[in-house]
Length: 228
Ligand code: SAH
Image 1 (cartoon, rainbow, N blue to C red):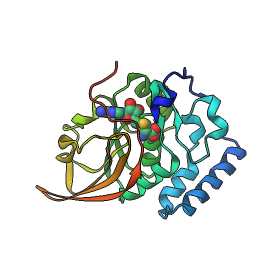
Image 2: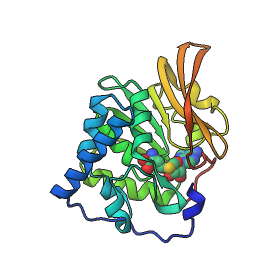
Image 3: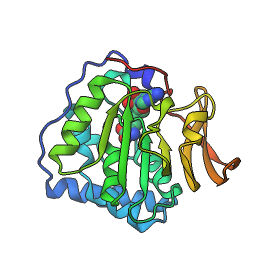
């Protein structure tokens, strides 16, 4: 998915205006997500509240409320709204959950989680994206903890987490992330190569993990190391 867009030079929109037109388009998007099977009203309300067009390159502003992924900087993508809604719904968030996100990217999924009142810790491996998304989220008034680092390591100092969401395709289940999940905690992660299976992991006990396959999806790959 990301490879199609690798050579696009990228300037993200820094216009923070949110017009009635944008709000109207968002309501339509929310209805589309409902029609596609998203049932969690809190998640739908968060998507209805967040100006997704600010998270995209200004040249894509008119497409921001289509249910599609789009290219962002560093050859990466902002996830499709349906995918954001599905992953968020699958997390079964409770008020004040401590959530780890791997792959901050544009910051849109992070915004949805913080809009829902979560204590968010998010890691991004590409400095360009880390700098941009952290700046935007701060300007929009969100407060979370953002890290430039390798999500394969997680954040052992800040864990364990109630929930973990991975927004890049992992070839296999990252062990270090599993052990940063609280007992009773949930991790949502796409597992596989070019195409992945959205997978829900529940930590039932210290050494007992339940694995549930949700369905097919396609994310940019989860890669090791940091791009400075
Ligand atoms: N949640 C993002 C999705 C961005 S695409 C959004 O809402 O826009 C996936 C992101 O994961 C990319 O930005 C990519 O650089 C990042 N990524 C891939 N492997 C990673 C790793 N090991 N650690 C941290 N981030 C990673």
